[in-house]
Image: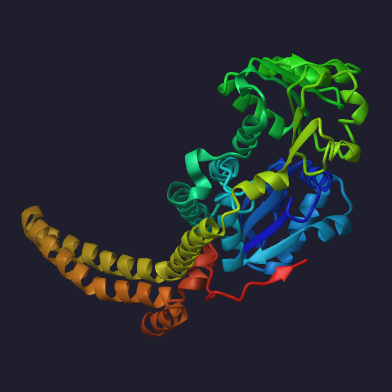
Length: 428
């Protein structure tokens, strides 16, 4: 069973997400010891914490994941449970694919999340945390997310949230963005993305301010200038563009910080989930504020979204079909193995009596016959699986051959997913 436990910016503020994600790199280690969970992929970004599980039992897997988040974050278990929800099967796959395609991002269609999900999956794969089902889930999702990016306007020119924000700022600045003096407030992931994009655009005058004392380290690693503590008013007076992205929930940028400015209008990108701006800055003629809502509106094309979701829906159907096919793979493997074993025994008998040349010719003939015999039941098995009738095939196989392929698979440590597609449920 596919289970997703998730928390994101869609229903939580940045502070809660930060708290939930604390120690997220240890979650998969804890879940590796849970008997009903056979694989995990953990996606932890500044905007979301999502854990995808290959599990035997829905509620047990969700409970174990909530326990793991609580242990890693230091939050109370009940508090964690109140902030996360859970999806299963096709609904979980549909959600992940929308995340991968940027449809669940603050700026719809941004491409950063695709790379973040790819990195999370690659890390889990390298660490041996995934299963065949999770591999199918993410690989099929990656293909369809790329199709969304290449065939719809949502993914135009490798759109990123930072790029969209700077494009909008460039439209209202009185000078080119390369010549603008830019002040970045914050040192988190959004600040890093914006700073890197500014440098690509040729912006030379970039300064960074942090209320948490991280400006010096950030400035050193990104080759920009740090604003010393207490020098924020001077930095604001110098700036043409302020990127407010700290998300600390405090009014970092206040009206008094603008006292030293000349007649230039200040352009402000208000990018934090919890705004860094004092409310009195809004509505001032000398401040042009561009918010996340403005950016989302810029590319909120319902037609493009509908096209993207049609592509992603096809991805979900492909994943479900592949999952159903995998449910009959043990039976197919057993059948092929039985035939192959019998063929090898017979070829060995011929070789001992008539030599290698005769045995080789005999083997070629038997192989052709075996391929013809095995083809129809293999094709039929996969057709039945795709149509949700895998149980019938497996039951018939057990009746004919006396082999319980599911029991043998579990004994080998690879629990089969013997369900047809269950109705999606949500746990909160």
